[in-house]
Length: 157
Image (cartoon, rainbow, N blue to C red; front, side, top):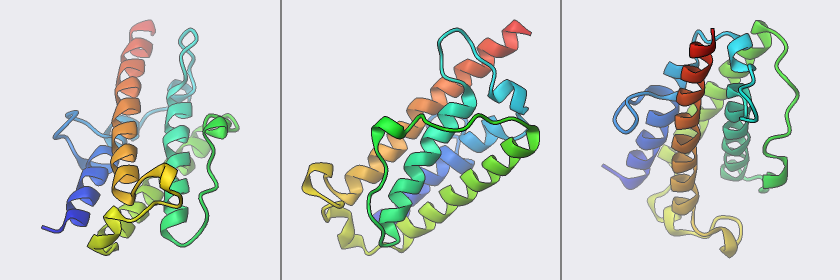
């Protein structure tokens, strides 16, 4: 199997359909989740919705580079989102999130193998491989938070 296909599979696992590392994924955790629960606060912790919007922000930023655009994302803006105010908004957001994740997965699969070791935008950001691996690790980090938040919020009800 090509490295790009293996990396794409790992990214798809964490967001869309895997259970190997965490025994769950974003799609499993978020499908059917009400917008009220997704936006519920627990003390000073981020909401589930905010964590998912944060991951989506980075997916879109990386996807933009893969499609020939500039790296326009900035860490300082990675938690600045309008609040979700209805179930319809939440479901529309999730549809876009999952579609964008699938698009990035396809771009990774189609990428020439040698590009994995190429500089990603600027040398200070490392290689394409490093950025994809970082996105996967970052996604798992926040997936763990989402799982814990769901348990905390469920115990409050």
